[in-house]
Each structure stands twice: as structure tokens, then as C-alpha cells.
Image 1 (cartoon, helix red, strand yellow):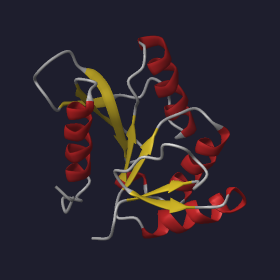
Image 2 (cartoon, rainbow, N blue to C red):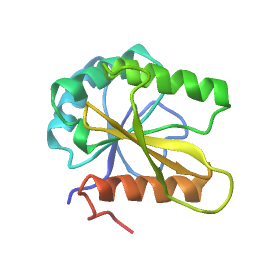
Image 3 (tube, one colour):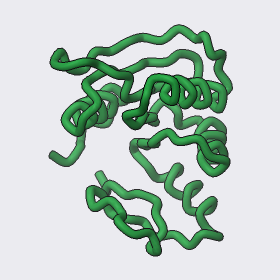
Length: 153
């Protein structure tokens, strides 16, 4: 297994330190995304609403790697969360009323939808409390479910 990398711009202040930043010039990001999609054992996408992310989601669909992609939803108010989920499902080319399997990852605290996985036809949703520990459990569980259990501890 290779390192956990994140596409980033070296000019950003406060870049996350939990992965190896993969610095990319602004005019080269599309080429770098395509390269990373081809090499990645697993892909984790934090869902925002942007043209850039829409382009990346289309590349994931075209590259047929949705089965190894996890979409993480940031902790948001209910209405904004629903808008992001609807946007994501639409960008994936799926019907908004698509049936989803629900996986409860943690039994403690109030639950929120934290991640979505799809094979392009159906969704699996992952629920846990929306705090750092809940996110770690959800990401580890989704990556295990896609067959990538060689994660760093």
C-alpha cells in the first residue's frame, strides 16, 4: 500500500497534516486528478458543491472507480446536508429517490449520515455521530467494505 495523499495547493494556509499533500499547480489539477484516479487503491472525496468537484465526479464515473470511492459528508445543518446529498446523487447520474442500504457504524450518540458509497446503481449510507471519532469509524468501515483493509492505524 502506498501513502495517503491529498491533492492540494502549496499556497493554501492550514493544509491538513493527516496526509501527504500532493502539491499541484492550479493549471495542472485536472491532469493530477486523472493520474491519482488511475493509481489510487481507494478514493475518499469530501463533498462540497463546486464545478471542480463536479468535474472530478464525472471522471470517477467515466473511470469506473465508484466501487472504490467513498464520499464523506461534512457535518452540516439538515437542509444544507440534504442539498449536498441531492447534488451528489445528481452528479452521479442517479435518481434522487434511489433506494439506499443504511449501515449504522456506531451505536453511541445521535447519528448523522457521514458517508456514501455507490457502485453506480445503488447507494450504501454510513451513519455515526458527527464528530472526529465517528468520522474515523465511518471511513475505516467504508474502506474495509470496498476491500481495502490495509489502512495505517
